[in-house]
Amino acid sequence: LPDLSAFPRAAWARAERTALAEASSADLGYGDPRGMTALREALAGWLARTRGIRAHPDEVLVVAGVSQALALLAKVLTERGVTRIGFEDPGSRGARIHLERWGLQPVRVPVDADGLDVGALARTGVDAVLVTPAHQFPTGTVLGPDRRRALVDWARAEQGRLVLEDDYDAEHRYDRPPVAAMHGLAPDRVVHLGSVSKSLAPAIRLGWLLAPEPLHRELVEARYWLDLASPSLPQLALAHLITSGAFERHLRLVRARHRERRDALLAALAEHLPQAEVHGVAAGLHLLVTLPDAVDDVAVVERARDVGIVVHALSSHRTGDGPAGFVLGYAATPAGRMRQAVATIASLVRQLTVSESQS
Image (cartoon, rainbow, N blue to C red; front, side, top):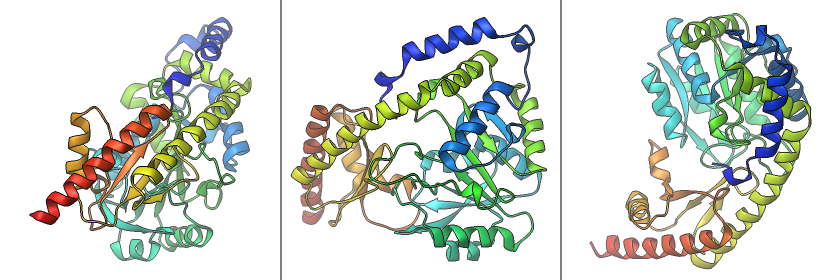
């Protein structure tokens, strides 16, 4: 999660007041299933400036976050006869379960230091793959230029192949320049997904989806029959937040705060877990820590939760073999509490490593 205490309450309240004052009577109806025109225009401009995406507002589909985007895509793809989808391993356990619940079978595709293994993807026989190229979850790897080109080549090698690009954590970067979205390389093959859940708050429940035709049209129809459209007033408020510049000012503020907390976490890890290897430092809202010694990371996580520390085991986000490790979120945790949490986790790692070596 982002630092929810930093949510721009005053700016959002102003945006909501403006939205309500300027909304026409027609704006208070059921609305366009694609989303309000004002928000689609604002998002098209925002994506062009920050992600290198050139898209007409009519190509933007407003959704209730990436979770709904995945649900819509799964519905439409299964209706097309797609039953299997490539999935990064390690990758988001939540997204994997989400796709399974909607009828798609995730097929493991390994991730290495350069991101998704496109050669391994080609051997799976799938026609769609979900990737997080800007900041892979949970490793933090950026999919490099060669792999991106290879992935586009894979998509174009067969009719109907698709790359689903979850633009995860793209706006949160500290030590590197922004990485352009994959959508710009192949808008006819890449479906782009994004949301404001990590930049504003999950409670806003707004995101976007860009897909080539005729998939876009099928998704709009699926959205209409699912719940008609997203609520109009929050869409208009977000549009105002973007066009007024308040959204970008907020991002600059939280980037600075998140950087400070990341640095505090890195210092705590260096002090208490010097044997750990840290991944994904340059961007995002979390770090991945892997350990050289055999330890049950799930057991560490369970013990940590018993004392009020929430951390995620790397093995929970992986279906294949690999090292033990932890996904450590830092954006919502004050520096002092973070140091204490890392010290506790390090103590648990030592205890369980000793226990396993004695068993």
